[in-house]
Length: 55
Image 1 (cartoon, rainbow, N blue to C red):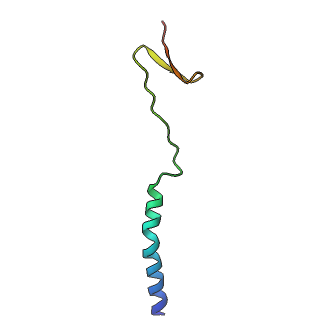
Image 2: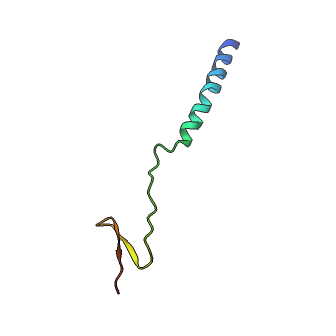
Image 3: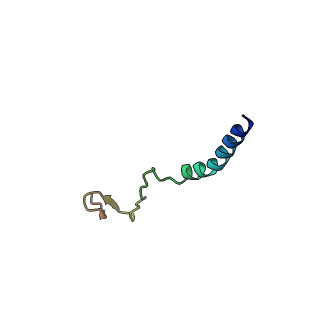
């Protein structure tokens, strides 16, 4: 029975660092870009560019 506990403990210690690294990888998180336009312009979603604001 002592051997089974040792093998289980070794398996947990071997997999823990890999799981921690995979958690921090951000594979499943969506990334978005921060877009800033010059003063007097605004981002237009339709064209995907900065356009001059009038008015």
